[in-house]
Image 1 (tube, rainbow, N blue to C red):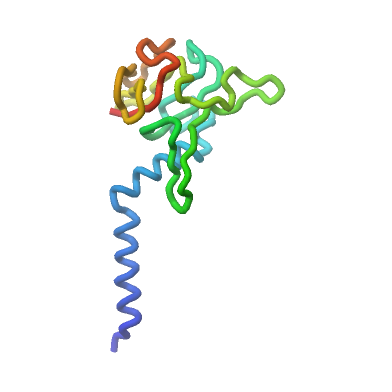
Image 2 (cartoon, helix red, strand yellow):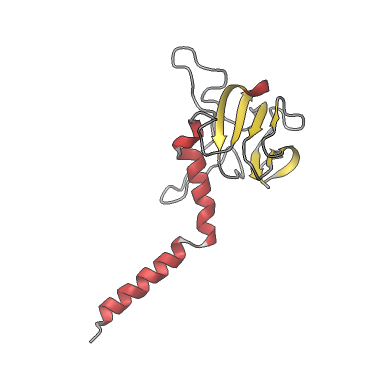
Length: 159
């Protein structure tokens, strides 16, 4: 004989699983990965995150590896039980002699970028929400100095 409690528990587990993999859940996981993943500050050549945004022109100074689209560089929402939002920042390199841009906010502070993805185009936008002027980098392309979003950049998207 099947017990009602076991049946209810099974149904609850199935509903929980379907909610966990709902499409809306993926958006926060990208924000969480961009914010907290160790890949963000790994060596550019070994990171699985294939877009690299730089503080200075010519891919110089501090950088951050980005793996997922970013709606607003100043409002990353990691999801889960954390209701806050955080600014995405350049990684801190050079303990005794910090690289230019170390720890600075990315929004309106980036000068160049590199796309190491084999398939997708990387786009950096002037405004949050993937709006306004943009600089696009085809697969395996870099831009030594952003033309349209130099130090005026607010979002990033793969297309």
